[in-house]
Image 1 (cartoon, rainbow, N blue to C red):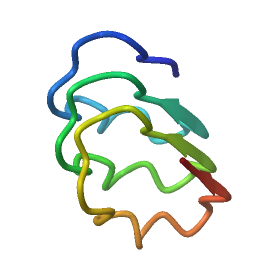
Image 2: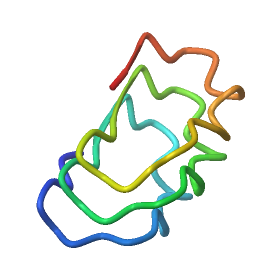
Image 3: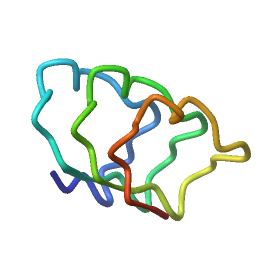
Image 4: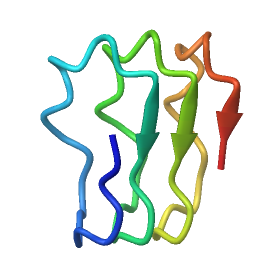
Length: 68
């Protein structure tokens, strides 16, 4: 799922995307990594060019191969 350049400030409403393997939320306004609790199959997570200062809340993503 590509959500680039959408002026997103918060990661929400992804609870139903349990089979998601790739997520691009780049070049937005996200400040905190959260809302990914149910994305257990996520393999690739791209969050560059946001306002995130601390990488947190991803330890449960055990299938994650790439994060940037």
